[in-house]
Amino acid sequence: MQIGEFLREKVLAVQEYSLMSWAAITNIFRRPFYWVDLYTQADLIGVGSVPIVMLTGFFTGGVLALNSATTLAQFGAKAVTGELVSLSMIKELGPVLTSLMVSGRNASGMASELGSMQVTEQIDAMRALGTDPLKKLVTPRLIATVIMMFFLTILSDALGILGGGLAGTTWLGLDFSQYSHMAYQSLMFPDVLEGMVKPLIFGFIIATVGCYFGMSTRGGTQGVGRSTTQAVVVSSVLIIASDFVISYLMIQLFGR
Image (cartoon, rainbow, N blue to C red; front, side):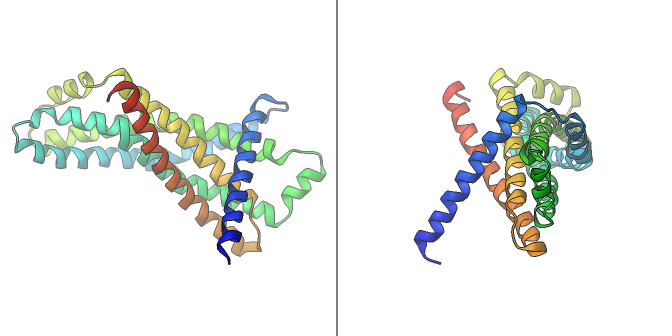
Protein backbone atom coordinates (compact mmCIF):
# COMPACT_ATOMS: atom_id res chain seq x y z
CA MET A 1 0.00 0.00 0.00
CA GLN A 2 1.37 3.40 -0.97
CA ILE A 3 1.85 6.11 1.64
CA GLY A 4 -0.63 8.43 -0.08
CA GLU A 5 -3.35 5.81 -0.12
CA PHE A 6 -2.64 4.92 3.53
CA LEU A 7 -2.94 8.56 4.62
CA ARG A 8 -6.09 8.98 2.55
CA GLU A 9 -7.72 6.02 4.32
CA LYS A 10 -6.78 7.38 7.76
CA VAL A 11 -8.08 10.86 7.00
CA LEU A 12 -11.31 9.35 5.67
CA ALA A 13 -11.64 7.24 8.83
CA VAL A 14 -11.22 10.34 11.03
CA GLN A 15 -13.85 12.13 8.97
CA GLU A 16 -16.32 9.25 9.26
CA TYR A 17 -15.67 8.99 12.99
CA SER A 18 -16.25 12.72 13.48
CA LEU A 19 -19.48 12.68 11.49
CA MET A 20 -20.78 9.67 13.40
CA SER A 21 -19.89 11.26 16.75
CA TRP A 22 -21.61 14.53 15.82
CA ALA A 23 -24.71 12.66 14.65
CA ALA A 24 -24.81 10.71 17.92
CA ILE A 25 -24.61 13.95 19.92
CA THR A 26 -27.34 15.73 17.94
CA ASN A 27 -29.58 12.66 18.23
CA ILE A 28 -29.68 13.21 22.00
CA PHE A 29 -32.09 16.10 21.41
CA ARG A 30 -34.22 14.43 18.74
CA ARG A 31 -37.20 12.16 19.07
CA PRO A 32 -37.83 9.29 19.51
CA PHE A 33 -36.03 8.58 22.77
CA TYR A 34 -35.08 4.93 23.31
CA TRP A 35 -35.25 4.89 27.09
CA VAL A 36 -35.26 1.09 27.38
CA ASP A 37 -32.05 0.83 25.37
CA LEU A 38 -30.51 3.55 27.52
CA TYR A 39 -31.35 1.75 30.77
CA THR A 40 -30.14 -1.56 29.35
CA GLN A 41 -26.80 -0.10 28.31
CA ALA A 42 -26.41 1.71 31.63
CA ASP A 43 -26.87 -1.61 33.40
CA LEU A 44 -24.44 -3.47 31.13
CA ILE A 45 -21.78 -0.76 31.11
CA GLY A 46 -22.13 0.66 34.61
CA VAL A 47 -23.36 -2.06 36.93
CA GLY A 48 -21.49 -4.74 35.02
CA SER A 49 -18.21 -2.87 35.44
CA VAL A 50 -18.55 -2.25 39.19
CA PRO A 51 -16.62 -5.34 40.40
CA ILE A 52 -13.56 -4.80 38.19
CA VAL A 53 -13.55 -1.06 38.93
CA MET A 54 -13.75 -1.67 42.69
CA LEU A 55 -10.89 -4.17 42.65
CA THR A 56 -8.74 -1.99 40.41
CA GLY A 57 -9.26 1.15 42.49
CA PHE A 58 -8.79 -0.57 45.85
CA PHE A 59 -5.55 -2.36 45.03
CA THR A 60 -4.15 0.60 43.08
CA GLY A 61 -4.58 2.80 46.13
CA GLY A 62 -3.00 0.15 48.34
CA VAL A 63 0.03 -0.30 46.10
CA LEU A 64 0.41 3.46 45.74
CA ALA A 65 0.40 3.90 49.52
CA LEU A 66 2.95 1.13 50.07
CA ASN A 67 5.40 2.45 47.49
CA SER A 68 5.01 6.15 48.24
CA ALA A 69 5.18 5.78 52.04
CA THR A 70 8.41 3.81 51.78
CA THR A 71 9.97 6.52 49.64
CA LEU A 72 8.59 9.43 51.68
CA ALA A 73 9.90 7.87 54.90
CA GLN A 74 13.45 8.46 53.66
CA PHE A 75 12.75 12.21 53.75
CA GLY A 76 10.78 12.18 57.00
CA ALA A 77 7.55 12.92 55.14
CA LYS A 78 5.70 9.69 55.73
CA ALA A 79 2.73 11.60 57.15
CA VAL A 80 1.87 13.11 53.75
CA THR A 81 1.14 9.70 52.25
CA GLY A 82 -2.58 10.42 52.41
CA GLU A 83 -2.13 13.61 50.40
CA LEU A 84 -0.14 11.84 47.71
CA VAL A 85 -2.60 8.95 47.41
CA SER A 86 -5.61 11.25 47.37
CA LEU A 87 -4.27 13.59 44.68
CA SER A 88 -2.91 10.75 42.56
CA MET A 89 -6.15 8.78 42.63
CA ILE A 90 -8.53 11.68 42.02
CA LYS A 91 -6.52 13.58 39.42
CA GLU A 92 -4.88 10.75 37.49
CA LEU A 93 -5.03 7.08 38.41
CA GLY A 94 -8.74 6.87 39.22
CA PRO A 95 -10.06 8.30 35.94
CA VAL A 96 -7.41 6.72 33.70
CA LEU A 97 -7.39 3.20 35.13
CA THR A 98 -11.17 3.11 35.38
CA SER A 99 -11.46 4.22 31.76
CA LEU A 100 -8.95 1.62 30.59
CA MET A 101 -10.82 -1.12 32.43
CA VAL A 102 -14.16 0.00 31.01
CA SER A 103 -12.59 0.33 27.56
CA GLY A 104 -11.27 -3.21 27.63
CA ARG A 105 -14.63 -4.52 28.79
CA ASN A 106 -17.15 -2.36 26.92
CA ALA A 107 -15.47 -0.82 23.87
CA SER A 108 -14.71 -4.34 22.71
CA GLY A 109 -18.26 -5.40 23.54
CA MET A 110 -19.77 -2.56 21.54
CA ALA A 111 -17.51 -3.25 18.57
CA SER A 112 -18.24 -6.97 18.55
CA GLU A 113 -22.00 -6.56 19.05
CA LEU A 114 -22.45 -3.87 16.41
CA GLY A 115 -19.94 -5.57 14.13
CA SER A 116 -21.93 -8.80 14.26
CA MET A 117 -25.10 -6.87 13.44
CA GLN A 118 -23.31 -5.16 10.55
CA VAL A 119 -21.96 -8.31 8.89
CA THR A 120 -25.30 -10.11 9.28
CA GLU A 121 -27.07 -7.12 7.66
CA GLN A 122 -29.26 -6.41 10.70
CA ILE A 123 -28.30 -2.73 10.56
CA ASP A 124 -29.31 -2.56 6.89
CA ALA A 125 -32.63 -4.12 7.87
CA MET A 126 -33.15 -1.40 10.47
CA ARG A 127 -32.60 1.26 7.81
CA ALA A 128 -35.06 -0.50 5.51
CA LEU A 129 -37.68 -0.37 8.28
CA GLY A 130 -37.14 3.37 8.74
CA THR A 131 -35.14 3.22 11.98
CA ASP A 132 -32.01 5.34 12.32
CA PRO A 133 -29.23 2.95 13.47
CA LEU A 134 -27.21 5.78 15.00
CA LYS A 135 -30.20 6.93 17.03
CA LYS A 136 -31.12 3.41 18.10
CA LEU A 137 -27.69 1.85 18.64
CA VAL A 138 -25.05 4.53 19.15
CA THR A 139 -26.74 7.35 21.08
CA PRO A 140 -27.96 5.18 24.02
CA ARG A 141 -24.49 3.70 24.38
CA LEU A 142 -22.92 7.14 24.29
CA ILE A 143 -25.20 8.59 26.97
CA ALA A 144 -24.94 5.52 29.20
CA THR A 145 -21.14 5.35 28.99
CA VAL A 146 -20.59 9.03 29.80
CA ILE A 147 -22.99 8.97 32.76
CA MET A 148 -21.78 5.69 34.21
CA MET A 149 -18.09 6.59 33.78
CA PHE A 150 -18.68 9.57 36.05
CA PHE A 151 -20.02 7.42 38.89
CA LEU A 152 -17.59 4.56 38.32
CA THR A 153 -14.68 6.98 38.64
CA ILE A 154 -16.04 8.34 41.92
CA LEU A 155 -16.32 4.77 43.21
CA SER A 156 -12.78 3.98 42.08
CA ASP A 157 -11.38 7.13 43.73
CA ALA A 158 -13.10 6.40 47.04
CA LEU A 159 -11.97 2.80 47.15
CA GLY A 160 -8.44 3.77 46.09
CA ILE A 161 -8.13 6.20 48.99
CA LEU A 162 -9.64 3.62 51.34
CA GLY A 163 -7.28 0.92 50.06
CA GLY A 164 -4.31 3.22 50.59
CA GLY A 165 -5.45 3.95 54.13
CA LEU A 166 -5.91 0.29 55.00
CA ALA A 167 -2.54 -0.66 53.51
CA GLY A 168 -0.82 2.19 55.32
CA THR A 169 -2.32 1.48 58.72
CA THR A 170 -1.90 -2.30 58.44
CA TRP A 171 1.66 -2.62 57.15
CA LEU A 172 3.28 0.81 57.49
CA GLY A 173 2.09 1.94 60.89
CA LEU A 174 0.29 5.05 59.65
CA ASP A 175 -2.43 6.64 61.74
CA PHE A 176 -5.70 6.29 59.83
CA SER A 177 -7.22 9.51 61.18
CA GLN A 178 -4.13 11.47 60.15
CA TYR A 179 -4.13 9.75 56.77
CA SER A 180 -7.79 10.62 56.22
CA HIS A 181 -7.27 14.21 57.33
CA MET A 182 -4.34 14.71 54.95
CA ALA A 183 -6.24 13.06 52.10
CA TYR A 184 -9.19 15.42 52.59
CA GLN A 185 -7.38 18.66 53.40
CA SER A 186 -5.05 18.42 50.40
CA LEU A 187 -7.89 18.49 47.86
CA MET A 188 -8.83 21.75 46.18
CA PHE A 189 -11.49 22.65 43.64
CA PRO A 190 -9.18 22.32 40.58
CA ASP A 191 -8.21 18.79 41.65
CA VAL A 192 -11.81 17.64 41.95
CA LEU A 193 -12.76 19.41 38.74
CA GLU A 194 -10.00 17.66 36.81
CA GLY A 195 -11.00 14.32 38.27
CA MET A 196 -14.62 14.83 37.24
CA VAL A 197 -13.99 16.22 33.74
CA LYS A 198 -11.70 13.41 32.63
CA PRO A 199 -14.21 10.52 32.97
CA LEU A 200 -16.78 12.43 30.91
CA ILE A 201 -14.35 12.84 28.03
CA PHE A 202 -13.01 9.31 28.42
CA GLY A 203 -16.55 7.92 28.38
CA PHE A 204 -17.24 9.78 25.14
CA ILE A 205 -14.09 8.28 23.61
CA ILE A 206 -14.94 4.74 24.72
CA ALA A 207 -18.48 4.84 23.35
CA THR A 208 -17.78 6.58 20.05
CA VAL A 209 -14.68 4.55 19.20
CA GLY A 210 -16.34 1.24 20.08
CA CYS A 211 -19.45 2.07 18.07
CA TYR A 212 -17.45 3.43 15.12
CA PHE A 213 -15.41 0.27 14.67
CA GLY A 214 -18.52 -1.83 15.13
CA MET A 215 -20.54 0.12 12.56
CA SER A 216 -17.66 0.08 10.05
CA THR A 217 -16.99 -3.66 10.31
CA ARG A 218 -16.40 -5.49 7.05
CA GLY A 219 -15.28 -8.99 6.18
CA GLY A 220 -17.43 -11.42 8.16
CA THR A 221 -16.37 -12.95 11.44
CA GLN A 222 -12.70 -12.09 10.90
CA GLY A 223 -13.73 -8.46 10.48
CA VAL A 224 -15.60 -8.58 13.80
CA GLY A 225 -12.50 -9.79 15.62
CA ARG A 226 -10.37 -7.17 13.92
CA SER A 227 -12.80 -4.39 14.83
CA THR A 228 -12.90 -5.55 18.45
CA THR A 229 -9.12 -5.40 18.76
CA GLN A 230 -8.90 -2.03 17.02
CA ALA A 231 -11.59 -0.55 19.27
CA VAL A 232 -9.71 -1.43 22.45
CA VAL A 233 -6.32 -0.30 21.14
CA VAL A 234 -7.51 3.00 19.66
CA SER A 235 -9.70 3.94 22.62
CA SER A 236 -6.89 3.18 25.08
CA VAL A 237 -4.39 5.30 23.14
CA LEU A 238 -6.86 8.18 22.83
CA ILE A 239 -7.62 8.01 26.56
CA ILE A 240 -3.94 8.31 27.48
CA ALA A 241 -3.33 11.06 24.91
CA SER A 242 -6.37 13.09 25.99
CA ASP A 243 -5.36 12.63 29.63
CA PHE A 244 -2.09 14.41 28.87
CA VAL A 245 -3.89 17.25 27.10
CA ILE A 246 -6.46 17.73 29.89
CA SER A 247 -3.77 17.65 32.59
CA TYR A 248 -1.71 20.24 30.72
CA LEU A 249 -4.72 22.54 30.27
CA MET A 250 -5.68 22.24 33.92
CA ILE A 251 -2.15 23.13 35.02
CA GLN A 252 -2.19 26.14 32.71
CA LEU A 253 -5.58 27.29 34.01
CA PHE A 254 -5.25 26.63 37.74
CA GLY A 255 -1.51 26.20 38.29
CA ARG A 256 -1.81 22.70 39.74
